[in-house]
Length: 361
Image: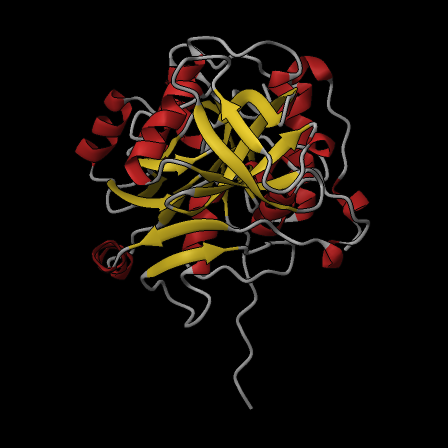
């Protein structure tokens, strides 16, 4: 498909620079391919979800993975910044460097803006589009703690270009249920939940299940191709354990719907369902790329924010609820002043009807 098919005009004033306060006061657009659109608010989930439904949340925790420091090459020094985007092993991360042209293999880096206990790394590899591989002196939990100490929250570029990182972002850009360190971007649909709302949903009979997908900075990269067939999707690490799968299956057997909170949860659930057509335990990398024509196996509804034009995420929601439906939904959201992107408002999308798969001959 042509990438241009997923374009739309978005007024810049609708890009949210801060979240709604409180979190769950954000607006929510209900998108039902059969019935139409309905303007709601996030707490209306208490009426939109039913006892027996399963709400699947992504419990990844965002590391403050924007690191600034100095490249050291003999007597020469250069200021550098890095956005970590994917852990390779206990000591190694892939990162986007600025300016990458100033880096060479084996360059020594001291990261931490002049702090006495600078985080030390070396350039172990260079790739395309400003990507480098950094090998750190520390590893494992020690490295995670050092990154937290020296790094800043990696706000999306459409926010970071308009304002500086603020102290409040350390809380605002993290879900209330974040638990597993490893993401460098937030699963932003989850930012709308409060502990109180989650408890009220549980009290109603909605089951909350946790999965983990460590969101990478590649989610912000613009598509640089004209045809979706030519796009190479970034890979992210995720896990769904056997006990979680068993509980979801049990609820499905009783008629419960699976509602994914965020495209990250959906991509992981559908990755874990592709081999057999039903959800299975999964651990590893996924680079699933969902465009119209994709057949969904597990997710019945998707809660998600409003996405960038011509982005892989707008392609995903168009696959889920239908391209014409989503273009109409976004036109409505723009006309009604919904707030867009990571700190913006939300939507609840119901899955469009799918044709039954043909029997094997």
